[in-house]
Amino acid sequence: MIENLRSEEGKKLAILQYESSILQKEINKIHEIVTTINDINYNDNPDMVNFLLKFKHYHESIEESLSKAIKSK
Image (cartoon, rainbow, N blue to C red):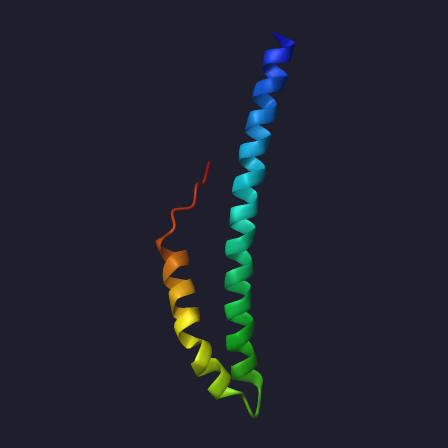
């Protein structure tokens, strides 16, 4: 019985670690975009050309993040 409990615990921990890594990737993407926007807002001479070149990527990343369901329990 204890071995079965340990086995189930291992499965649950693996699932939690996987979901945690997915959430961390989402957090990193959001942080990158927020940092970029803050750099533009607080810089006297922002690199708008670079921002515009990456805008499509940022937009797609935001849309993808917004469409993902995040488990709360």
